[in-house]
Image (cartoon, rainbow, N blue to C red; front, side, top):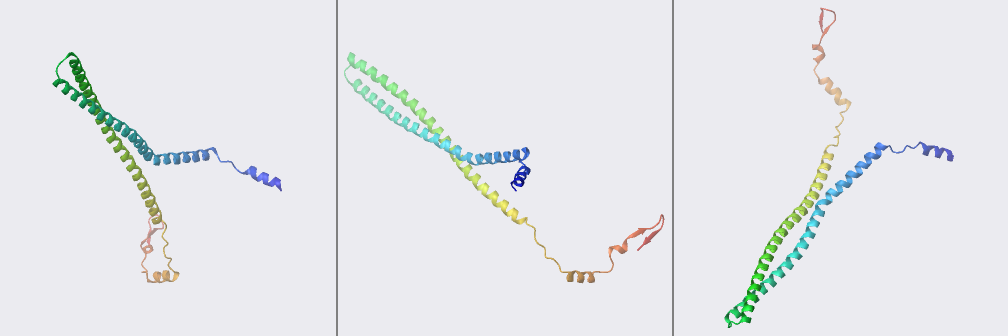
Length: 199
């Protein structure tokens, strides 16, 4: 008895290379399709992360702008006080230092303001891209659901409609009602070379 089982196992065919290749292609296609569905969400997540980093940098720049403004005000106050004071050699040097600090603070303020404007433009761009890919992911999900529903409705409408079978009694009644002149009476038959016979 065990020999027959072994023989049956030996007769079982292994999947052919062509079949394995087809299943491999299907598996690859499903994997790519899954990645395609997840791609908008991944892109939105990456833009969100970049946006968070950019917001931190923007908040640091705002703090630096406040510090630069404070330094500029302090330098201007010192400059005003020294300008009102009696001019000596030391007050002259202090006045020059105050003017230099004021101009440095002004340059720093311009540079930081420019960077802050660039960062805010970059932030708006990142926000728009994140929103776009988030909406794209939602639309893709909605479209996929709609297509599945449409395919389901199409498959439901393609089912063969069962036609009612007419009984033989109805067929007999129709054949009796039908006129005796049929198409067969109008057919011409050629029996010999020149002779035409009508039926």
